[in-house]
Image (cartoon, rainbow, N blue to C red):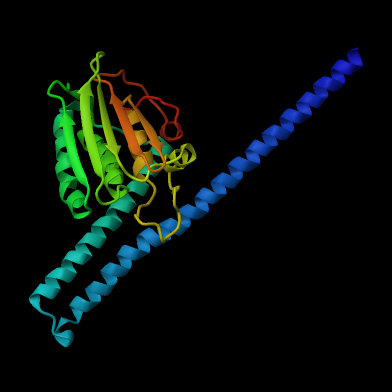
Length: 282
């Protein structure tokens, strides 16, 4: 009986070792794929605006030879500005992720009127939504309380989420941003769109830094794959949570819950990015 028990225990240990090895191999393969996609995607995201800057700067430099009109010079200068702004945004996102993963990211905490942050975000994307044929609406309750946090970082959260919703909603669709108070004094904000939607696996990918649900360069909306991961990490640093509910062809809802107050504690940025649900450094 003792020999049988020993053999059984040995068999169980060998099976667990095989399962652990299999899980480690899958994790390594996933990390390698994400890294490869990140390099390819970043090459595309950085080269495209750089080529725009270089190309149109060269044209402006040759304005005498090409006999460019004043309107053309202004148009080219605007294109250079837009490309450079996009490039700077991508670089800032990469730096933010790096700081979070190294645990060196901090928040400048103060009392924040969340209604003002949301209204500013809605105003900022109103024209883009109109140009894309998307209806962007806001329904913010009057009794939404103030929250304690970093206004610039909270603006980044809602800008990232609303930007995603507008980008991935086809013409004729809509995006609704709503906010209401919770009984415990917190606030829940919902960004609901009628866009393409995601499966559960795609939601996991969308929340992984540098990963892309559609990693091909022919995808219909560009992006560096950092918007949602940064938004989720920043929400967690504020002591809140970000949840995504979505279904293919039925749209997506991103629900962000923020407490009105939260205790100060130290959380390593990498833990936040990996979804530990920890609280932020203030």
